[in-house]
Length: 107
Image (cartoon, rainbow, N blue to C red; front, side, top):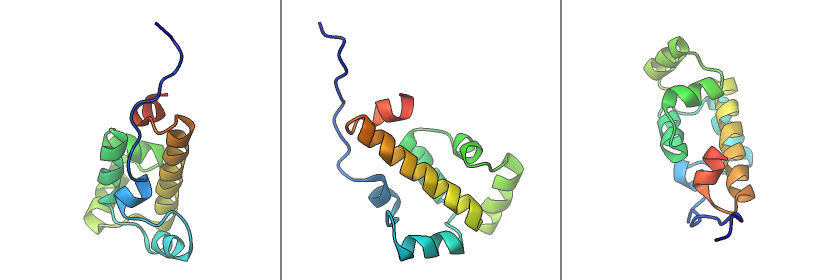
């Protein structure tokens, strides 16, 4: 029995495709500037198998501010930028762990 790392099956699509965002470019920057939809937090939380509150904490949104953003339906530019940075970090973790999403999230 080997204790060497063995990757789990890889994800067939990128997280960018899963959340419906371009991974870079002018379109992504424009979406960030406008403020991403608040519902994107739930999509990211599902993909990362985390609670929305944990995603909010990771991108510096308090529970009180989260309630305000939910009512408004949009994140601010700064919050959107931090969420995109979190998505990019997750994608890099998946790459590091050779497509193993469980290891990327828990590793």
